[in-house]
Length: 193
Ligand SMILES: Nc1ncnc2c1ncn2[C@@H]1O[C@H](COP(=O)(O)OP(=O)(O)OP(=O)(O)O)[C@@H](O)[C@H]1O
Ligand SMILES: Nc1nc2c(c(=O)[nH]1)N[C@H]1C(S)=C(S)[C@@H](COP(=O)(O)O)O[C@H]1N2
Image (cartoon, rainbow, N blue to C red; front, side, top):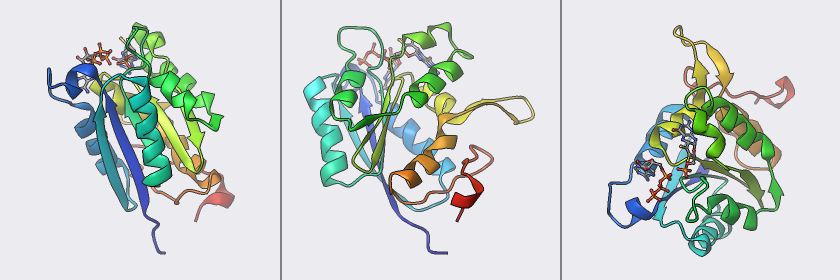
């Protein structure tokens, strides 16, 4: 079977990482996780930007409309502070909201930290691209994408990435497959190629 090639945008949104106060761990953490989780070909396009709504919106628009990304993962800027505007920027460029992703991420994160409810993260569709906000704390990236496993490695709470491949199918994006040890993609039998 010829495997399709997907373009994925990675956006780290942090005032301090983008100005060099600390090293950005958002982009390498996202990249490492996807390198282990995806078994189909992909190309990543990475951006490190400040918590500025205009800049976040223009970055997302560029990654979808010009770069033709089918999936974008953002990290950071989802909290309650005045500077946290990632959800507002994401909703501003959306055609459609996908509330289940944010609901599930907060549900997963509550197993790790009681402050999970402070993340206002959203997911949306713009054209044929799924855009998902993840929290800024680097360890939250694997937690929300992968979910919660018991000591034997069995899934206790599904990570949100389990639903990403089928969502991409439904919006006409490339067919992607995952490393099942990390995250098993769920599709109805009729949709499995
Ligand atoms: N890109 C990043 N690289 C490394 N660590 C980060 C990054 N973003 C966040 N963190 C860590 O997670 C914590 C919580 O992230 P949060 O997004 O709330 O940061 P913040 O307080 O908004 O500040 P900033 O936007 O300057 O990162 C930060 O204090 C930092 O320790
Ligand atoms: N899995 C996970 N989710 C998490 C956290 C975390 O450490 N792990 N931190 C919480 C905290 S303390 C905040 S303020 C919000 C928003 O973080 P952000 O502004 O970095 O996006 O995410 C929450 N969600």
